[in-house]
Length: 550
Image (cartoon, rainbow, N blue to C red; front, side, top):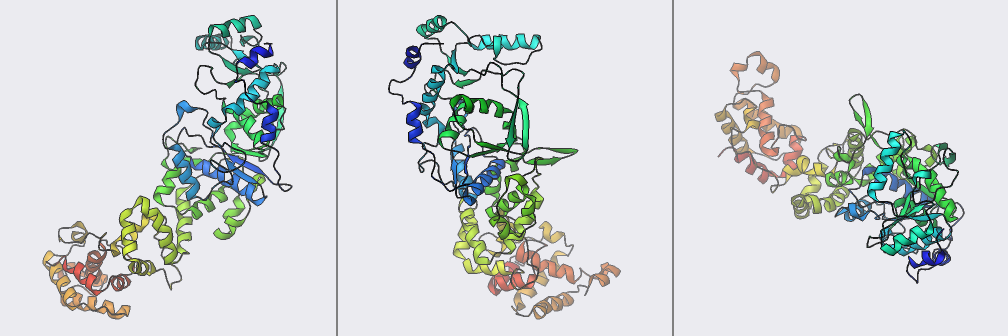
């Protein structure tokens, strides 16, 4: 083992001892049973919806037990950092209401960026070197590749362990010689001598007792000395941070289960009590013949920005995700489900399927419960970023927007559910606003030609409708003016008569009504035509109808 003087010379002279760190980050004064959870986003890519899923559980567990939920940015792999990733984290936290009780800029256990905790980690790396639980390794990339090839040829497990760990028991004089030459090195953890072939048992908060092969590898805990920042690997950083931040339960993806044996070794070597672990099953996608993990590369719905850009209400998404976490919550009304606790022991071990059709149904049901005022208040911040034209019209014509939203939604037993997300507002309600509506001005328009009514009949029928239009409040009276004009212009009184002798009529009352519908809404499908016309007002009705008669 290296002399302590040599070891200490590798670190800043004023580097505090671990005891100083323990005093700086004392045990938290929290109620009995309070949980401290953490979400650790990495700025190496966009936020996966699975991240929101885990953060939601983290937040709920901490808040309902009187604990703390913190966000710690795990940015030790700076070579892979993606520009804009941190801003996306903040968008996700803000949109889904997942703001932590501790995080960047607030909280007593920071800094909350791992890249800003360099000297904290160095205190503990030096401690492991002093106690012989870590060592310097000067192995080059070529040497490591050669080791791997020989292991593969011998059909041995790959890795840096035992006799393959060429610097594990190196002569101190040889190590000092490399240091004198300025050879770059990493610091490796010295796995326990008896680790090979051993099994480790541990309890997972979701899966119960698990058993895995003990870690045999001497993993890197501090990256190369030729780097400007001496940052640790994730494994070591997580052990130090979860101890000092007094994390009680680590909730993370199941892919980390195989790392638990190593993490337990690190906690033991450092003299720390490990947190409890809960490994969440991944969110899945249905594919022909089975299912697979929701993929960042393949599936747009894997990205949090997909939901934000489309404008799925946060409440609906959180309700849906809670139902995936605990099935009982999916059976409750949304307000109750959002207030109920998420229980780790009820999380399944099979990955739940993300079904966008189901989410849209939930979202439509939720929006249908909102008043017009609530819809506009929720729509506005979304439109400010994602559809400024919609923002402009709902601000300029708020009364019209409220009247439009009332059509077939207010005073009916089964309100319309044409809003599933805020991006649906323009296609569903945009036609109510002159600024968003493109008038139908050409009888050659496919929406008109599709009705199979002769152009001259279209012109004359709509001209008469505009000339004599009356905004009757009674629906039957309002439709009578279409019936009367349809009869005047030779339309059949119903589809049955029209089908008997189609050559005798330009169309039926249905086609006559559709001519009015298309000119008012731009579509052959719309809410109740009378309600639409009353909402638009007589001047706008006449303006739109005359657009096809001139």
